[in-house]
Length: 500
Image (tube, rainbow, N blue to C red):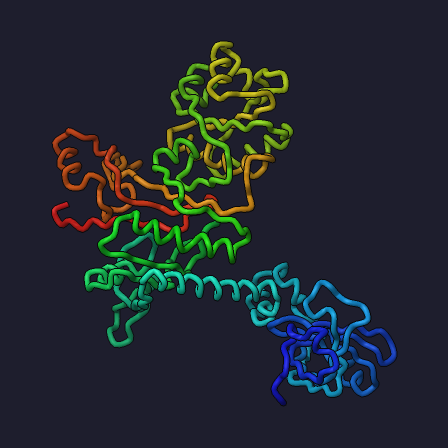
């Protein structure tokens, strides 16, 4: 075997007349008849067409199965008919020698390489080496490599040191269960795989390494969810000492948008500064602390207006509404969306609309119209124009907000003109409540974690202890980074005062 001179994605018409050697897998063979056949060769870099025109070469190719590994030496020539869909579509290779490096002995593959993503997952995992030959799957790995390299370069440019932290460590209770590894020399004792490098990076800060980062492996024994992978994942982990949250924001706002715009699906990303939204405002306006700012829909409160409308689900409950202007959905489509909202939110959603005449109609309209003054007040409060749909949720405050939040997300995606999809919209959710009343205990509990600095410091806690301040009004110096309705990361100013 000799070294290849070119990859299968490299040759162009400028190479016509050159003698070349390519190596790759036989992706496809099209027998035309006699001693004429067209072979598509594929490697990591692309595909090249090889034209078989004599009996000797045909004798080598004909008995081979797809995905056999070949080395082909031949001459490049321009194609008579150009394939504009591939970079090498202007040329083909006429072989002088074909060496079979690896013979696929199976006439049938478990799945078509270029359609592997449609195959059963168990088959894809069993034949992962074939799945990874699919350019679409391969490109995901290439993308990850490029993104990690870009993140690393950007963080180093901002003065951060990349420091790897231990994988075998002691158990530290966090948000999920630990993966445990038996300690061979200490029977009955175990190492834990880190859920995050939290303690190690704080040790680094204490030691004076005031700008740390790593592409950190995290291990969490938890169930799969729509927005996370179970088991193992990697994250951009960072820590800064002697820094305010605005310092952290400035780094993130400089690092992430260019990378998202370059490597993501869309080429538009938020510019600095990102919008800052207090937690309570986010819950009131979007029904969630993970708002998708590409959607222009907002939540309104109709608790007072619908308290006495006679509709039992609204009685003694908080009522939240999501108006959608210029809505062209049919009744069947609206009912389907409400059913999907119920599945995701765990409670029913209701609806009515302001029809083309400006009248309240459909869904629960008879309850809204029970008092004409109430109907007019709602139309005024929601600024209802003809052809506006209103989806409503009711329950305890958190449940009503959850229903409304799911409604915003679904209606934004389904109703034309209410979502600017092709962009990345970042925001910071700030000022999280420090405390909440536990649903089960009924007692005052930490809302997120006890390690964040309360806004107001020791003084605000002393005032709460004296009864001068409601503990539920105390905010923590915590923040979440959200993009397109997905929480990307969380952070906080650490509670560094031992007296607190």
